[in-house]
Length: 357
Ligand SMILES: C[S@@+](CC[C@H](N)C(=O)[O-])C[C@H]1O[C@@H](n2cnc3c(N)ncnc32)[C@H](O)[C@@H]1O
Image 1 (cartoon, rainbow, N blue to C red):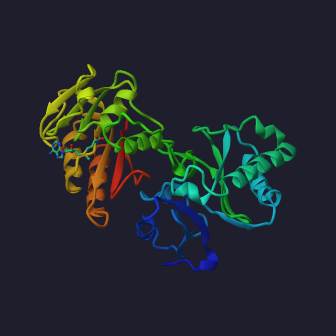
Image 2 (cartoon, rainbow, N blue to C red):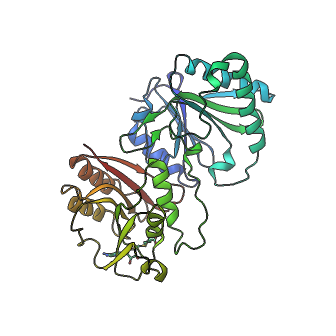
Image 3 (cartoon, rainbow, N blue to C red):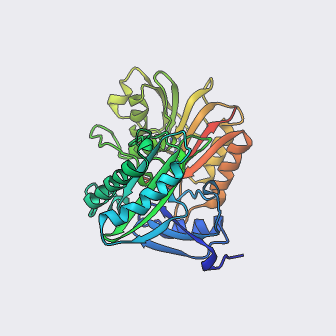
């Protein structure tokens, strides 16, 4: 049953701009009792949920970040915008042992603009939040982990206009697969450095997946990259110090082929299996999305990888039956899973997994 708008609480979700309708449709499928949804800005969706909805129960694949139970605020000055945020934060920090952080967000950031309008004003509001805490909760300041990933409480505000912001303050929940919800990356966006040597821009997706998980291959760990060519993902794995078996029927970039840590297998990636379990399976194969479930069914019940990052590519609308089938295969094999549509994902989803104990 749909909750009346008066009995619901606004939540904000960020997503890759142009995927707002996809996120709204997913939210409505996940939470049939949503009172209403609205796109507030490019990459920003408001959904009104029943009060008390636990954040972990609303973690849509197409959302990059969530501001649960958000409050809208109109005020003329930086100080007046900052004080309610600081006061909510002080309440949340009362009795807390862990660390915390503040994310100051602006709409242009959601579109990937490195110098978005209102950035400076948002930073000044964040400074004013900290200044108020200095007078009201000085004890808490030394537990701020600026830019930290291991934070227990997160205050987020999004400056929608000069005198209008939305804020949410609350706990950060660790996910079994890795990472947290809400994400501890501001707006859920990883800082992906430009790499002019990368043979394909698709490397950005894998960088985002590792940032989201807050985990990545360790030095010397064995990784398998299926559909590896020309080698953008293989290069990311090498940058982490991993050893990579790259499987493809097309050729790998020569400089990667020459790397002693790379083994190339010219083979059908759907038929190829490693001789022994590896740390990470990654796959960016272009194929019908239902083939990803088949791929995972070949690997996971045999526990051939400890972790995986695989792409499901769509034509038109997301193929939810294929996504659900792939997730079901992983869960049946006792893997924790998370699906996410990253900023650099095109019409595809990234499915990430970690073997349970
Ligand atoms: C999007 S590209 C991968 C790009 C790669 N991740 C990178 O960063 O450079 C998809 C690759 O999948 C490969 N591929 C598709 N079907 C395959 C199959 N059945 N076996 C092996 N490779 C396959 C294609 O040859 C292509 O190189």
